[in-house]
Length: 472
Image 1 (cartoon, one colour):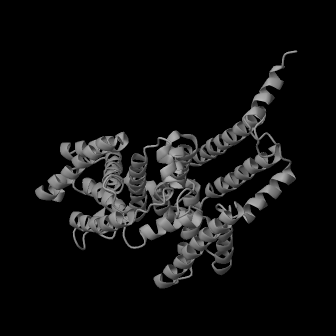
Image 2 (cartoon, one colour; image 1 turned 90 degrees about the vertical axis):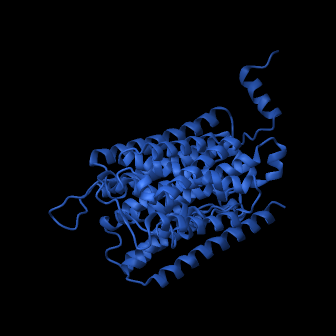
Image 3 (cartoon, helix red, strand yellow; image 1 turned 135 degrees about the vertical axis):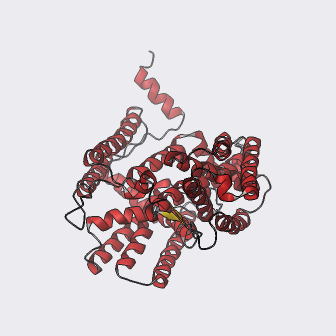
């Protein structure tokens, strides 16, 4: 008697040792707490910390939970949050990029110079500096081709064309120029780390200082490039979607999330693969939908402090962050490139023996990080409406790295998600915003932020130790 198709399928699954055990809701909950006890904390500490911070500042300041301040908080933290999203890729390999902050400042300075100089970078930089700048971009193209990082080569080539042609001022060209310069910087950093073999700490520390000098050279001591008069550039961090656009964003975001999560759940279930119980999955989707609906409804109310101006709608930075979150999550979880990043971060030698081009992966993450730094530069420059010699300096890098680590990304490599940067960024933005409302000096803000980062690093180290003990 021949096997039925279903029996044959089950037999094949059994032969390959695939876990087909179905869990009840109670078993899933117990399994989750068991993973927590085993050191797999993920972003839970950051989420609990965020809830605690919101509660504390809501009690201490009557203005903290107002719609105007919530929208302002999102815009204030968006630039550093985007930089942190790029740094997650670097941290997954156990590397560090100390130059991400000042690299973003270089991108902001070039973008602003192109606008204020009417597209004439040669006149803005001077002959010698301009030719060195273009020469650096050409070197970046050559290095990207050598390492076969085609995206880096393409963006660097775009920067060369924009600079050489002297394209007229246009906000979209200027933002593309910033992104292209960021990619070129990442190519150079990645080459020094992966091909030359220099420690990333040393390379990026040196470049941190170098890019500070470049920013000063471009802008001049005491100088400033104003971009607040350009409507599109200013609206990036200060504009809002219309009410109908806000609800459309909600439908697309929540609908897409539900389709992906529920689709994957029922597909795995139909194939007999282990998956969380359906009530748990639907509850998760429902919670996201509820939070999204409440947030959208609140941000669509008029939050203007006076009766003359109407300010309503979801800030533009929200769809920007969501788009980068979706793209970054898809790349890490659904592509071969993302799997290779986790493999190299977990064990570089094993990844090399498995046929992964470790050198290329190591170089490419710096391109991702610097490109994200350029996007962050666009957002934070838009927020303040200008670019000065301190752009990307001060605490920009520390807050960006802190956001990734506080959110749950490990400093030791191999563990982290893009969502961790978003959660950690919200924590740091809440600290900075709340203490600012309480009129605390910069010293207190730095002390509290440093202690939060220290606590996150301690939790990371202890959870890794716990996980190591549990796996024995």
